[in-house]
Image 1 (cartoon, rainbow, N blue to C red):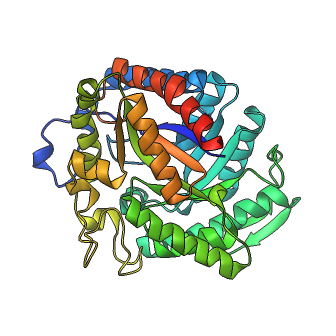
Image 2: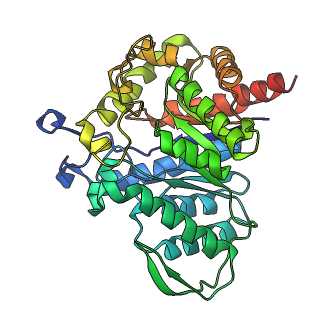
Length: 382
């Protein structure tokens, strides 16, 4: 059984004079932001999310980035709260909260518990290490990211599962009284998922905790390696990983004809080429990731002489699995290939990106919900 999630980073694509700056992220000046346009975009994106539930998606994914027009999800929990009020059935997937950056993990535990209660138990709480840009945006040392992440995780889980008051004295966090009044509806706590773009430590850590691991926009050969590492680590930990432990996110656009599908190409290239391009230290600063880690942003070598994602053409992306586009019949066939090859139980679709217009986005969502998802559910159950 596979479940299907709709996702958009809710981008702000009106970004002039980009060639004057090293990256659209972190240092691109916020003077280019127009609040009136921002307000319109939020209304538009929330409408698209709500429509995804109407047409039959199983869940809605939200994320969080800072200091960048590529993502107006500035706080995953705020986006989730808005969607909870607009929906009734879909899972709300927080993928997620950058817990290494929170100075108060107890407050985060409270907020997610509140979301779980407000949604009647529909929240999936993803925990994210983030990228270098996030560390720089709040002035946290990248070298402390992993240990802050792990301590924050332990404190949040204990807050959700053990009665208070109790005291916490760790390396990074100190609380005399941990005693929030609200607790999550789901027991022992909301499901925890871990996303990633290739960190070996993160993959192993997710497997050791039994948390589903979700690959983002990765070529399938890379995702296969990561999932094999997850399965091996799970076996060493004492259990057999199944499809329910693995997820894959890909860009996706569906149209009535191939000619219509081509209208999405330039917008997806904005997502990969413009959105991701920049100095490597913005993404993977020294001390944050183990040397030798192969991510979607790094060059392949040897027999896998692969381009980084931000250098790939549409043809490269389609072949690799990072972008699925075409008519409903074509998209169903390609998604079946991806699901069977990778053995995943969760498929996440980035269905809006760059400047993809509202009408094209809504029609793609409609075709996904009315033709693609029913066909997948039917054919994969046979």
